Length: 462
Ligand code: UD1
Ligand code: CA
Figure 1 (tube, rainbow, N blue to C red):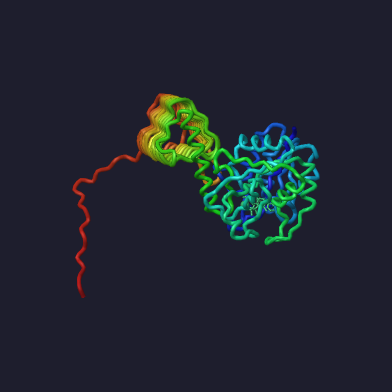
Figure 2 (cartoon, rainbow, N blue to C red):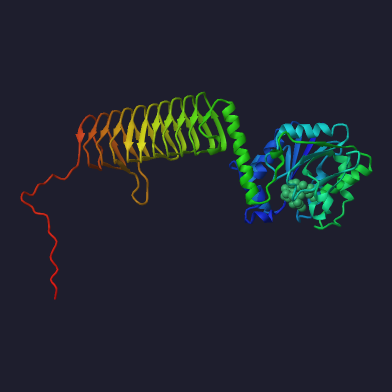
């Protein structure tokens, strides 16, 4: 049986009070709609139809890459006349015999497993509807049942009377039904309701009239079906999402010092015995080896980190490859295109950009290394700066193996320091320094015997 997933994502989302279309707001670092698309793609034999409208160009520009052109398409809903009208836009491109599964672009936490159960519940020609009981059903469509407990219709809150509003079983919006049947009902929808919209929910009463079984399915967890209408719900869902991600990591053996103070906004893969302290944020993709320790308040963006690495507190590391046994921080910034080989130490207040550092080198204090190649077993003294920029162009610094750079030195690029060279502290190196030699540039030290400190002049009153 083929599944035609129709993702409704055309609405404006006024309550977000934002110029960004609602479905482009992020949960876990990914737009809401990206989550729905990713979940739909987990269903086998699914064709995906995304109904978009509000902020259309922006939505397509951001998400087009997620839709495989052979099995998915964008369907434009020029004006947003309601959920029934939105589904109607997609139906002409959908095969009669397939099962339509309706998802919402603003409900990102639904699991593929729950959707499979919903689809299965419609397999015999029934209309399968996902519902859930909420303590506070405000804002949702209510599920109306008869004395025999059979569903008779859905009533939207704005159209409901007091006794209907008291119903706690709500419509999540997710439903599955045969396309051929849905088409007949959708064609007959009208907008004679409080919102002057074509409600998809009105097909339930039509199905009942046609003698179609309505079967309700509930999600594994009520959080799965929550939608985002405003920033408070966005924040709430972010916390649920992060809780789920943290639970997955804990299950896989990662130590999270506090799962409530950990944010994964991308993908994390890891070896064994990884420990992550509080307030760590991971964005993009992070690959951590085994026995990696990450201290508190660390931001990692697209990193590959080898075994036995220790990242101390308050580091920011982006687009970098860190070899095994490295120790970084506290307070270090490793910027894009940096590769540290094994056992490199980068200490406090060190910034490294677009540089490679070979094994066993140490840059422990207050240094800037940019556009540089640093050899193995090098010791860069405190306060060393590679002057890589002349105000117009960037230049490279090449430092050989076993070099010792004394503290407070400036290496003015382009410049090369030969293997085994020593640079005297406080030097400004503007020409290549030969291998194995001591090179320094330093104004001669002077002492002025008998010099007196100035004394404060007495102010003469006039
Ligand atoms: C809808 C349901 C309600 C349910 C609730 C669950 C209807 C009439 N009501 O109400 O029963 O409890 O969802 O969250 O279906 N959309 C379009 N085009 C449109 C209108 C909406 O694509 O013309 C999309 C929106 O982008 C959104 C989804 O459909 O992703 C739901 O629309 P929304 O306006 O949020 O519906 P609710 O009033 O929340
Ligand atoms: Ca909604």
